[in-house]
Image (spheres, rainbow, N blue to C red):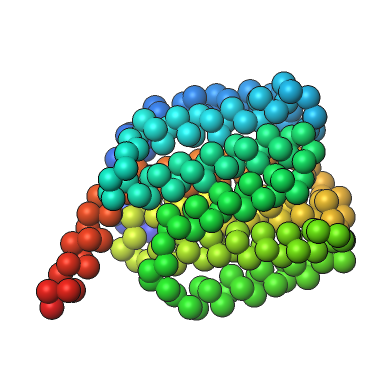
Length: 251
C-alpha cells in the first residue's frame, strides 16, 4: 500500500492536482464558507422561507463567481466555460424554485442545466461501453421509484433521468488513462449529482431516506464544485483538441 502511495505522490497526476489546488483553492474559499453557513443554519432540515432560499443559493452563486474569475468570453476557446456557466445559472434558478416547493419548474430548470453540462462535455469519444453501464443504472433507478410517480411526473422524471445520466455518461467518457485532473473532476461531480438526485427521488417517491437532507445537499454542493472546477485549463484543452483535429485533417 505504501508503495502505491509513494508512486502516486511522484506521478504527473499528483503534480497536476497540487498545481490546480494551489491555483483554485483560494478562489473557492467563499464557496466553502457559504456551504459551512448553510449546514450550520440548515444542516438538518429545509425550509420554505426567503432566508433559507438565499442561504441555499449562495454556494452556487459563489461557484458562478469562481467561473467568472477563471474568465469567460465569447471566443471558441471559452465555449466549455460558457456552457458550465450556463448550467450553474439554471442550477441556482432550480435551487430557488425547489426551495419554494415548485418541484416541476425546478426539475425543468435543472434539466436545462444538465443539457448545458452535456454540451460542455461533448460527444467525443463515444465510449458505448460506459453508455451501456449508465443506461442500465438509469433503468434500475427509474424502476425503483416508478410506482410513486403520477400525473406529469410520469413524463418529467424519466426525461430528467435520461438527461442526468446522459450528462454523467459524457463526463465519464472523457476520462481515460491520460485524462487531466479537471476532467476527472467533472466525472466525479456528475456521479455525485446522480447520487444527490436519486436520494431526492427515493425520499420523495419511494420511502424516507435517513439523513436525506444532509446526504442530498452535501453531495449536491460537492458535485457542483467539482463540475465548476473543470473549467480550469479548459481553454488549453480546447486548443489542444483543435490541434489534434487539424493534424488528423492534414493526414
